[in-house]
Image (cartoon, rainbow, N blue to C red; front, side, top):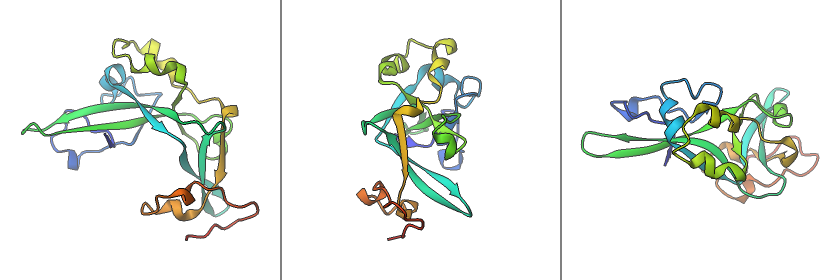
Length: 178
């Protein structure tokens, strides 16, 4: 799937707004996400994610993961856009919520991370009642998560290697770009 939600009714996906995340507080009401929230939910697997923490006059990238180092899944929504000549694009977005106590130190939002015990119900297309879905949209328990500063190389999409997730050595205040 393409990351960046494309609603089914847009005429030209290239010119359409393609949100990469959706606020869980309004997802059931907004026309952009309302139908997908009820009928097209997905899991977006991850081992961790990045956020940029304000430190003085600069932003320090941090890598956020589970303390157990196990993979996890974000709550997502998906949509299928179909063009005039049967071309199609399947796209998705990640739901966000207020941060837990740990991540509030880093950012004012966090992705909705689902408990593995909830995957089946989240994915069940027969479950469409907002009252059954809203309870999933809460911050993940902070005691199960951790984060640490990483090298500034994560700021460049050409860098896609293990160095992007290695913790900075203790006492390093200004990571290198290499």
